Image (cartoon, rainbow, N blue to C red; front, side, top):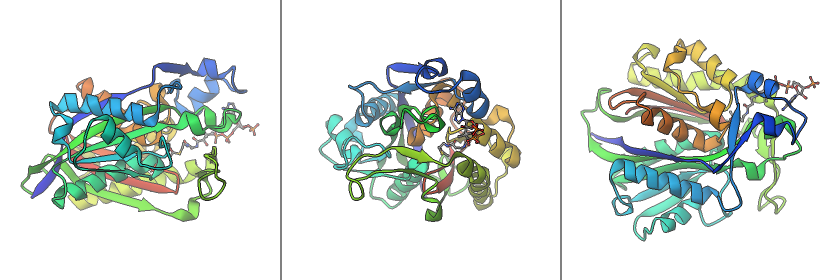
Length: 323
Ligand code: ACO
């Protein structure tokens, strides 16, 4: 059977780092409060000349170089983002154009922080359905542009960045020993849509709006939702936490990551954590974390890797792949 195998990875961060200490002069907060509640120590903030598309392009070029491929080798560009450069066209076609591609097809996927899991699952279906041979899957965000910088309960949590992977159709045996995406489990429940949202949009206010969140409500649901979909992925593949080499979670908050890993019996040494360095970069957080851990040699070819995320909607999902 056809499997969607990771052929390359890459990442991009804005030039400017913003530390917790710097935030102390923006809102009434302290480094101690932020570290204790979230684990975040710094985040990257896009300058005027950096956008979701420019960061996404940079990550895409890094992934192509890592794979030893050129834009000519790609058929599908899929971008997970909630902070597009324009309402339309899609940031994916913007990046397609930046890469000089006039062939193939490109579209955006909007599932907030779960966007990258949704996008990899979608690209996998396109590859296994025979529509694309190679997909460039990008998570790219500039959440700094939708933050209310007067609201200390949200502005300290998020950052900007982009990450990308290239998925390639390869023949597998149909067993869990295959490399590539082995199973995906996506969920959403719009009953929670007002707990984490942006208070603007083209069809409602005609403005871009700002991010609003009931932090405690999000926290209350996060661990249960995340562990449910991870357990579904284990059941579907007949694997357990012991078989996992790496858990690469969405990087929202250290306490949510630790709580989920503990509930699943996954030791902290097997969990990739970058929230301290990047903050919450929404759909970019998983490909950024994958890129860090694959670059430093932690994630190796043949490793069993679980991706998971939960975010606005609520949306949530898990995806098991062999690297
Ligand atoms: N600095 C200092 N004090 C603050 C700050 C801040 N930045 N923000 C809030 N406070 C204060 C509050 O005003 C409150 O003060 P009070 O007791 O005098 O009223 C106190 O700290 C406690 O506030 P809570 O909101 O109860 O703090 P909590 O312990 O719940 O932590 C947090 C807040 C970190 C947002 C937590 O609820 C959380 O982690 N929620 C999950 C949300 C999340 O991670 N969202 C990311 C996006 S969703 C996703 O990606 C999954």
